[in-house]
Length: 254
Image (tube, rainbow, N blue to C red):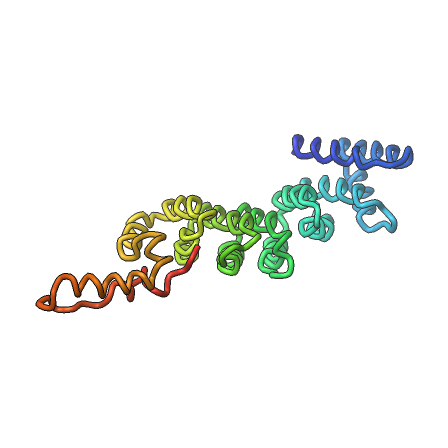
């Protein structure tokens, strides 16, 4: 916790605006360093006190969360979905050490909410860290929703791809296979599939669909198949058109 705590306190110190803020800040640090039951009680009271600045509640929640005190849960979940990414990261670190069974459900709800996708990066990473029953279904659902061309939240999708590879659950194979066709996700998706032991499946898919080009050019595959049969002569028995296979006209453009 030491490194993350120092990063938090250094950042908060830069936010202080008055001598009174500095006094309150130093008092908070004293309570955090003592790590006594009485100190934790005072930190917990700060979480529900009115008119406390956000930075004070953040420090209190972080210290309590890392100590496994479940009174920090609500504040940490609020910060996990905050608009400031550094506060989200701090909250995710503490929630990962809190040991509260509600954490995975909250992270899954935040990650899968389409209205909060811009703030879903740290909930996604937290789900992978927790390895909870909710983790794989939530990451798959989030990734599938983001596998659209020119999606601005590709970093969230990338975190899903990496997390699914780390979790090692083969339910993720279809979504990861689709992710391979997206240029920004392709390398990570291939690596995650390899961790799931599906190298041969990937090779077979490439052979049928001609790789990314086969998936992106299904109509061309059909036209070329017809031209090829005509060029080879009428004595050959026609087979199914190439474009009708997995790499044909139904392919997903990256």
